[in-house]
Image 1 (cartoon, one colour):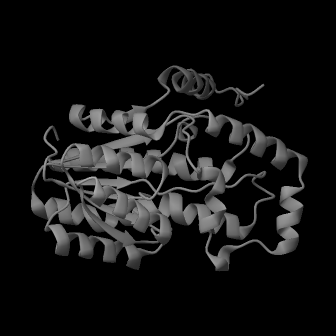
Image 2: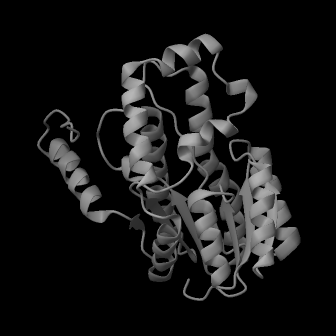
Image 3: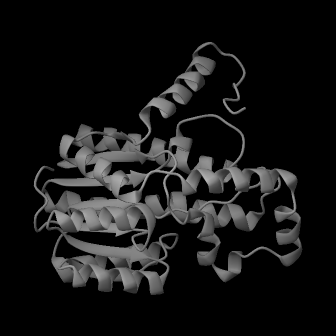
Length: 286
């Protein structure tokens, strides 16, 4: 897709972070934009600000972990704009803690948003794009963590590696069919977003038991990882730069979008060497 003007973009997790950066970048290209997010106050504010800047925008409150919400998102998109040309399955959350210490609620929440959100987006929007038979593109947000082997952030990495595999499979299947739909998987390094405050949007039914909350947060390992990740996020790449990478990749029909290629490729090479040499996983972290 080289021409964006007047085409329709649907972006999840669009009220902040990478999603908002992509939405604003799409607006600069003259696209009509559907903003989806679970955080209604921030979503409405984003819609207001983008409309004030002259963008054609529709905000749709959505919980991407729910199939019914994603189906409603597609219905409202078609009612408003009649088509969809760019789908960015971007909504994401994360939790810390060792994999055996994370609660069932942690797994359900992160898997629901990060992986099932992408699954629902593909299941709902790909048939619409195929029926349109027009030039379309899908961008699934994974992470550099979805390509490497390391300790910590286990649930997050499980979901992001799932998104990478899902995106690769989707790419092959659409190419095999000769569809006009291209696919990219976004694997950013550290980005300056609000992901460390993702708990603000955790559904009530998936909240921690108060005793579990204290136990988890008092863990020295949890506190060390949280401090390290928070510092890395705060100094991460600005969201508008990530959005530039995404739009350039769409134009170039580039599948893997790496915002920090030198570091990520080094870590990927280490993991691949472990696999190819059948050696035990190497910890790349000091």
